[in-house]
Structure formats: C-alpha cells, structure tokens
Image 1 (cartoon, each protein chain N blue to C red):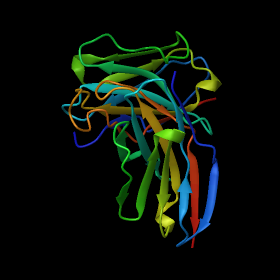
Image 2 (image 1 turned 30 degrees about the vertical axis):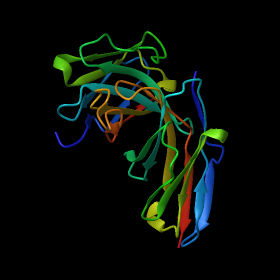
Image 3 (image 1 turned 180 degrees about the vertical axis):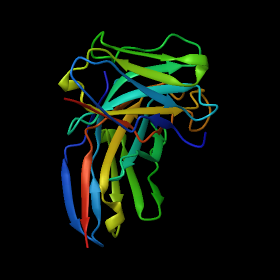
Length: 115
Length: 118
C-alpha cells in the first residue's frame, strides 16, 4: 500500500520569506511517480510538477524548486521569495503507473502568505 | 472541451434524496477519475474509468455510490439516499491514460461539485 504524509497542516509566512513544504511517501514499488498540486482559494487543483522514481535531479521553475531524495522517501517543495498569490493548499501525491493510475494524496498543507 | 467541466457547481439536498453529479472530461482523455474532498480530509479516491476496461470501484465508500461513463466521455456519479456525511466537494479529473506518453498520468481536475446534505 502507498501512503503520502504531509506533516505540516498549516504554514504562515510573511511575503518574501522562503518556505519549504514537506512530503514523505511510502511505497514498496521501485517505479513510481510523485506530484505536487496547488489548490488556490478558487478551489480548482492545478498541476505543478511530476517526477518519476528514476530521476532524482532537483528541479527549479522560477521561484519554485523541488528536492527529491529517495534515501529519505521525501519530495519537498520550496517557494523562494513567497508572494501573497502563493497562498493556497498544496498537495503532494503518489502514483504507481505511468498510464492508468490513481493518485494517492497527502492531506495537504495550507500556506498563508501575508503582505 | 478545454478543461474538465463539472455540474452542478453547488447542490443542496435533503437527507434521503438521490443526487447526480456530472463530469465532462477533456476531449481525448481516456481515463476519468472521481475524488471526494471533505473538510480537512484531503482527497479521497472513489472510482476511475480506464478506457474500455471495467472501472476500478475500490474507493466507493458504500453501495449507495455508483458511477457510469457513457460512450467513453461524460461520467455521472450517483449518490442514493444521501446522508449528512456525504457532504463534501466531489472532484472529477481526467488524464491521457496511455502508458509511455509523457504526462499521461497527470490528472487535470475540474472545479468540483459541492454537495451539502441537510
């Protein structure tokens, strides 16, 4: 069985601070995929990134960066110089297959960025 | 369509009534998923349809819940004899679903149907 744990329920920061959202996963499979989704107050989940288990390279996209470490089963997400528009609930998720596959989601971390 | 469309966006019903929630996936997406999001509970998988294969119903919480997908496109989630604990946001998502394609298992979500059972 697979499991995703996001231990941080809520994080509050002031604009321009850096913030890291933690994600720890459990799976017995050697091939898997990890995702991050953003759910802004409007409610619609927005895909941010997908990584497969064979690619441990960290990725940077603008102010967003992701740190994937198989040794600790973690896939953490960092927002640099946070902005008010980053306020949302962020979900980490795990999938077993590259095609048809359900996603197992963590419970989400609510990020509040104040001006 | 350009995105995943769900209707109604909001539904208020009385306990014991049946409700139907509709999902229109992205054109060309062969996989369709239903999730439920309850307050503070994250996203709970309900059911998914994979092309022409039998659906995976392993997440349905009781036999009051059912779903169908007609013609490989539009899906309807039906909840019979609704209970107050069914109150939640029901999210539909679709994906390309073809193994090997880059991004095939990336789910695109609709805005959800908020169900309130009084």
